[in-house]
Length: 536
Image (cartoon, rainbow, N blue to C red; front, side, top):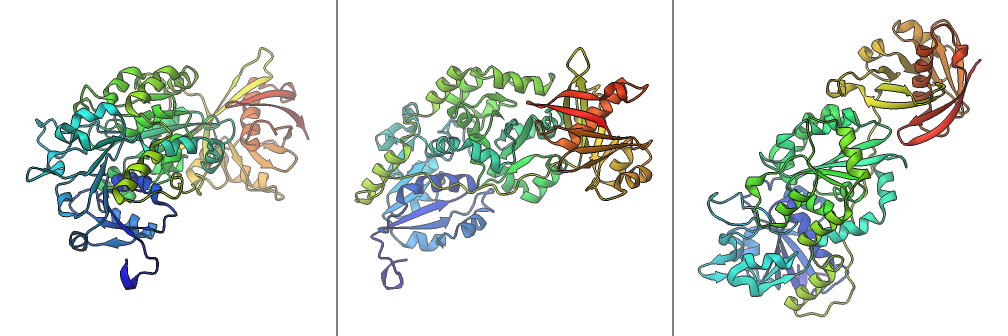
């Protein structure tokens, strides 16, 4: 707003066209170049017509953005128009248009045109040309190898790198903080699953993969996050997506929202499992171990960097154990391959905002006053609730039977667990009744008098009641034997570990408990510790 109704007398008016959440995300990354500059007023307009645009007005409202309607946008003249989505009505807007890709370059065929037309998403002829005249004033490219796609408009292109990648590179420097926001312990690894949209995407071809990863990756060693393309959320709705993933979410899946902070899922990741979407390219740009679980070959031209990336990184094999493949990808990552792939997609790494600022301010006829910094990414405030019940596997690692490894898996996903998993069920007292009736050990809420006896009486199938105190974990067997386990400050969590180790040791010494007493070395995931097991 300007003139007598405005308070700040902005000298330049910038209009941002928001068509989908995806394109809005990219535009917000670009707008970081105008932060703090009171000479520049930014307004937004929602471009109607996209089947994936339903969430855009809500996101803009949450941002507190100034939004005008399309007719007002057409009637006014702007000093700069920014769009990260190509559509045929852009020529109606008055002002020099800066057009950007909404992903990692222009590396997919456009889904909106005749399949025989060799048009790239983001560069459709209907958006680039109107009545024989080129529509964009400026085209931003992430790499010089995309210039040949522009034909007669190549002289309007500038290589500006990728502001989204640069933002995530800075986020990655705060990796420990991000991991804390996601609820990870220092010894856990984060596996982030990413999916583009459409019938050839990872989620379409491997819809149970989020749950399968949770079922096969030991809980105390790994956490699993999912970043789904905004078009998936728009097409199906947030309720439906969470409903489809309900058991996975209750088993610890971290589902990051499409408007942010989805970026932390890549910045904090130890391994990324993706498809032919842009986030696979961003994972390579961040040098994250990458595997592909799907790849829509029909959507990706064979001369693109994305196609070459798919030939350089490992493919997830659905017939092999997932945990072994993830461990191998992390422990044997080929960083040179990832860097070469990233250099094929992104140039000017770390310099994108500076280049963007220079070119956009040239269009505005202004000199920049501030050094640009990436926009703030919202913090992830809600750590996932740990599952109330786990299938626990304990195995001996030492010849004397005094070294035990413990692995936990979400019991709600046992149907997807690896075949032949020998386990016992450990549950918290707040688990559902059916689970408690089948639990081998139950962790009570506190150490109130009689809690163990009440638990064992109510659940006849329970072999062990577990009570945690500040100093130790106390285990009560059905015959009244009480065992005190101390020194569990190493591998967490103490109550689960103590119950699992004791059940395992008792199984090895069926004739009596005393053979299982003493010091025991315990491994839980990648954490190591030693405990002492004593009769009370």
